[in-house]
Length: 449
Image (cartoon, rainbow, N blue to C red):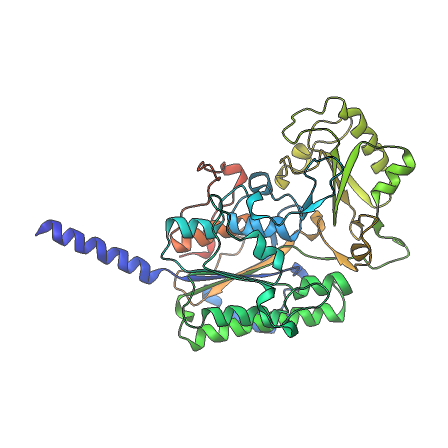
């Protein structure tokens, strides 16, 4: 009789744990700078903050990871680790193949740590997961790779929106269509974890500038999309077990021409050509430029003959207007070390260049053959776009209001927080080993009961 009672008690505990488990919605407003997450710009969101004050934590200046680009930050949000561990070191990189151009990092097989989707599918397959992305490249980045990564149960991309729901220039889905995709997919079966990326603020901020009226309207549209999600959760009786985490992958800086900055575009390849310096590959990535030494393998720990060449590159870079810092991933004479000067960037990965150039605020690195990037009025990538909002709210009793003075969290803290809420283990390296603590985030325990 006693063994039977113990079994029944265990089953009741499991049932109670499942009943208490919240449903988590991670909403990433791509490009939402921390300075624009205000009641004036986002009245629906901040009305919710007021209504749910006892279960809401507002972090006005959380931290994106470096570089402050879309791809590395989305991967950090969904793995809980820095680029040094997951390997997505920017939006683009060079594969170190002679004569090959830079490539956009959108292949899921390049992610070297499990995503939350993979953890859920392999360790808790009863959980329903959804990924609804306003950019097709993100749907690709979180797609399935046999033997490496699992896709969410529901994977939605702009191709599933109507032609009227997509921007004809970028192919991104408008926020109204993206949130509509989530609401439609979740209408009959509520996901345990839903991740949605709203792209309009980023798209408009690039094209028109972050301080433009058009960007303000895009922020209002993202706010309305969040409001639609909250309305559906309430209408379907799901609010009481919901957790919403609203954040951004990066901010945006204005590239508007000023008398002090008449030409904000840095085409560094031209400067090297004028100086007669070659033997390197350049990858421009917004506020960051990666410099790779030709002929050097990715797993190299020393530069050998390339050191003198890179020292000359660094000398040229220091004389270019708009270049704020020149940093070395591997030792280069007279160049500050990336690891010592900015250890918190966690960019010690072979996909990073041997040199990292950092643009001053209001400048961007652009390939001279990329007229689209050169015409942008807003961009990101450097440390100046690292401040992002993060708001944790909802109707779940698992939530608490973080005490005043709680440290601002980072993008890498989001996945461990979601894992804690859903009872999931933390993501591991693809070989099954744990990611070192110094390369990982921590649960934001201040927001949890």
